[in-house]
Amino acid sequence: MAARLKGRNRIGYFKKVAAEFASKIKVLDGVAGILFIGGLVRGFADEFSDLGIVVFIKGKNEGLKKRLIELWLDAEHRHNVEIDLEIHSIEDFMRQALDEAERWEFSKAEIVFDPDGEARKALTAKLRVSKRFWTKRIVIFAECLKWYCCPTKKDAGTIAEVWIKRGDLTSAHYCLNYAVELIIKLVFALNKEFLPSPKWRIFRSYSLKWLPKTTRG
Image 1: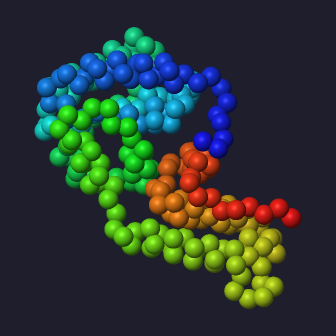
Image 2: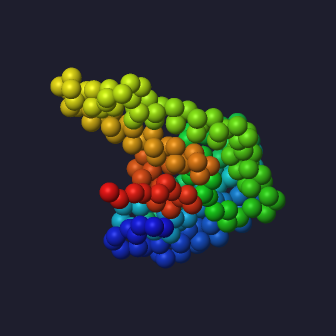
């Protein structure tokens, strides 16, 4: 990453706990796949982090779900870490509508157990987009950004500047922030990346493959 996080990195301990937990659940009959997400994949975990694990199971196996929850609570208690465990049947996951942050999270997931290839197949299907998907996003975000940052008339001022003249600095500040958000969305789209959750959006933008060049006056 272009920027480093401060604080004590507990990723080694987190990975050890995750590996132990995965080793106990992958032997259970009906477990189709195990994914690591979040800090486990980013390579950084501190006192504010939880341990993100996704488990795919075959069918609606309530007995298996109960056993997974028992192992989850036991691991949290013994290791004193918060585990964010998601349990999905393959069938339900394929029918589920993922929001933007979930699509980004799953696009970064690490598959650690997938004996029959079902987990990878499910992820590929859920993250597949049309050829026009990214082009449409780029056009929409660019047009919106043009509206907020490029006045249609000479000396007209941006929308934020208009609100300053109107005497409402709160609205001006909001419009300026919204323009920055459009820039961020546009840059992610140009990199063909889904948008992470807002709390990670700025930080994750630092590590995108392509970033606009900056000029210094």
